[in-house]
Image (cartoon, rainbow, N blue to C red):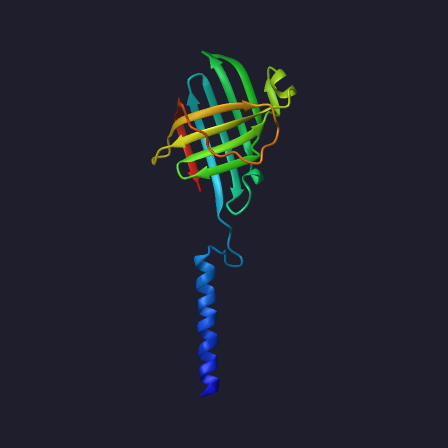
Length: 162
C-alpha cells in the first residue's frame, strides 16, 4: 500500500510540474522559442521603407536582428536612401517599434554622423500598415524601442508577430 501511494504521489507531482511549466510558457526541449517578428513594405508620403526583423520573445528588444531600407523620392528621383541593420525590435499587439543605426546612405552624410532612426508602426488586422512614425536620433545603439505614437498615414503590407 505504501509503495502504491508513493508511486501515485510521484506521478501527481510530475504531472503538476509539467502543467506548471506549460502554464508558465516554458518551451519543451527541442521546440523553438517564441519569436517577435516584423516584416513590412510600406509607403508614407514620399517615404518608402522595407524591413525584416526578428528576436526571441524572451530576450531584450536590443537583441533583434534584421535589415532596414528607406528611400525618399520626388517622382522618379531618389532624394535620399538610408540602410542599416535592425538592432532593436519591440512588437506589442498591432504596434511595433524598431531601431536601426544608419550604416549606409546616399547622400553619404547621413551615415557619417553616427545616428540612427526609431521607427514605429501600427498595423490593422488584415496585414496592412495604417500609420508610421520616424524619429531620427543622434545615437547608434538603444536598449529600448517601445512603439511611439504613429502620426503619419501609411499604406502597404506589414506583418507583426508578438
